[in-house]
Image (cartoon, rainbow, N blue to C red; front, side, top):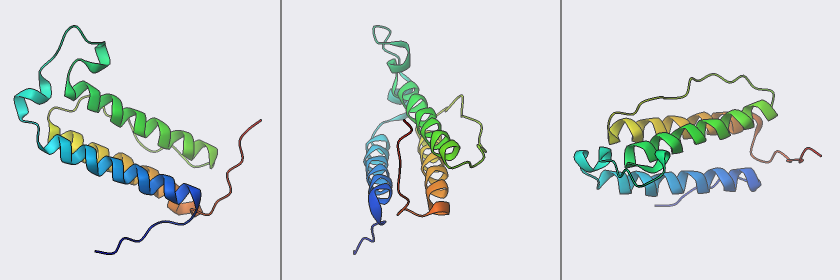
Length: 118
């Protein structure tokens, strides 16, 4: 199957972001329900279970998207998820976070020249 890539540096970033999300989703699909929520108390709070790691990843994805939206003077339109009960909810939430990011970049075009704030 032929893949169409987005143009420019931002397009490449979004393509890579989606590729990584597909790999993560494929990995999550192999995890059974009990293992998704099992906690390892010796780990840091955000890393004690796959469920908590996914919550952190998804909230970070929305945080990144919201920073992009703020830089583009776009409204922040989502509430961050607080609880993801199972792996399927995590997969859906991750896809929604990617769609939210892509929608911001789609609206301005991927050939946008990015200038760092000094």
